[in-house]
Length: 356
Image (cartoon, rainbow, N blue to C red):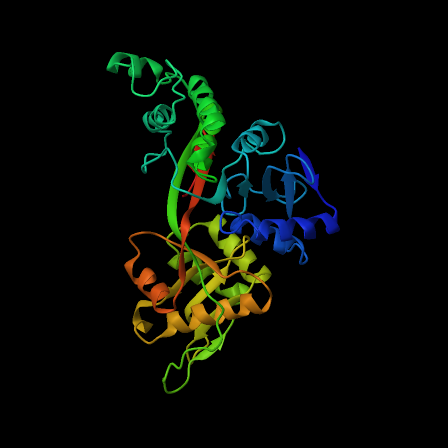
């Protein structure tokens, strides 16, 4: 493990990560923020330098932490060799396994999951068989009956971790970061952590030359959020309504760009914020103010603000969020070939206290 603290090397890393879009977007956003004052107290961990194979961004150890705050306790991941990523996960001191935390990253469709939160060893087994590297007999489609297939599946967390090690060591042709969820889940399972995974469409907005003409009278009061607005955003966020989220939103507002429309009384009615990975998030309009063009105006204004500072305009959207997908298509957002994955990991001792 190497903690990269040299400012010159961090700028070099930023340039390298840019050449690995879109899979590197989350880590790239975190590194950009580190290189621009580091308002969220992040640091970079690599397997080696300069020829690194895996990068993890994490909260600085000296930063104040709440073991239940999975919003702030977030790691972003990018790797070129999954074995290097797995070794970093397993190395002592890289991850704080005693707190609730997130792992975020972009990747191709994972081998596991299907919404279950558990490694799908049948799919891993199938991938090995299809590539001619099945661990039972080394042949494709020969000499394996159903009993042999059942015998080849893991029966414990430790055995499951070993199966993933074998699979990911051999199946590099499965796609860049396609094993992100499988490896993360397997290592977490070996440490008796519960895992909740959510997968999103990953999107990127094109450069915004002009803002839309809302044709509204009076013209909307377009401004930015203040920390005093954190309570409202906490109540309206599907991931919120708890104290950890309120504090996290307040920190995002204080540290990163935001945009909102305010009513005549000065209250926010539509907004979007930027997170610690330079991702546009929590785009929301109060129900009584919808269908006025506010969401489009806010999204494009924030995108333009990020672009003016050199940041990529990235976002994530759930597959069933029809209204947001429609909005993104209307502004010609690019739906990326990879997906965004968020894993929330909870130690057994804290699982009853976590608000997800």
